[in-house]
Length: 523
Figure 1 (cartoon, rainbow, N blue to C red):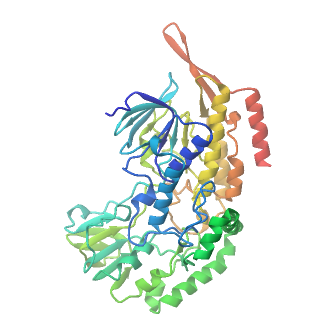
Figure 2 (tube, one colour):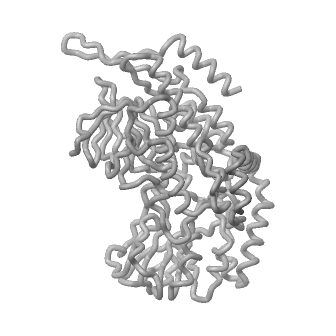
Figure 3 (cartoon, helix red, strand yellow):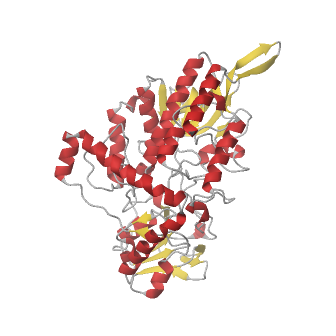
């Protein structure tokens, strides 16, 4: 235990990636300085700190993949690499004076709601503390997932996940198996193929890959952005607008994606001459059903003579032999998993215990993840998730969604201040259900549900609990205010003899104002 034992703060933020640092900046801008940022690692950055694999880069343009309140005029490329994004997050931490609030090596082991004191008790790797409000910003791409493969434990070579890259292991001259064909794999394959003796890609499902229109941002451009900040804002606005116009094809008219599909097929044909390899690499589902990936070097790398594509997933490991589901056997020295993350079963949910003594994971075990406006879950008062259920995007920047959720967080905290005294807000079950029904109904005709693929957007029961089925503008309007009509207001228990009864009210004037706001947002 550290000196932070028994400390109490107004807000505890979990995680120091984009979501956590953004929440911290917003707290300071709201005049709240009584907060801590609990980070399990020894530095900020979240997924952009952890994913340092060769070739790691963002597939969203740099000027859109940054905070609107922290524009960066000196992005070196139109699509930034991992190092520059990590450096940007370090810049945010310094510029907004967040360092004093950071608690490194402080992984949250347990967060438990105290129904009498109306606060959260947090046990961390560096001590314990309590907080009135907890903001969970661990992110969906933070806990790597390695499938249970028979015999993997006895593999004599090297095994690691793309998010836990072993930079001390030299891949030069090695026979390497790459498992998976997601966003990480299509960057890793071109980056390592020139060094390895042989590379075998195990592909369960081929991705759709479009050309990556990436270039260096010129010195005159950067000069203009420094001298005229409005030019940076304009550039960001154009990038945002283009993606907003694309949303309808994903959410309402997937048939309109046929032209994009033709362009993607042409991208394969340009780089892959072998008809059999081309067949393996051509998806049989509608483009957009899985995230559309960007690369100019993926297909050329796969066409190299020392690179093999096995159109089947990894099924078994026998000594140093990896065996695909179709029976293909390959001798390898190293296995690299690019198999994604625990997205619909986030580990943090198993560590959060709510008012009824159940974990968040248990409350979501029936119908999947669900949160009011992607932020708050019934039975878990004063807990807000940044990048919560159904806030993901398939075609734009998650920073836009994060900033919308920060607007919601700010108004949520203002409502608590207006209520005064010790109070907590617990989303009403019917409000969560109504919001979730609205989201799922809109999801029915989207490409993510109708495109004919099985993606990481879907949970074990096939329910899409990940993606937002609308524009970022729609989401921003839906999260402008925290509507008290959607919450029960909790007060400390009133002692009556030896019994304690919890006090709950819904708020009168505030509720009416909330309903009016809700109607305005819906309109």
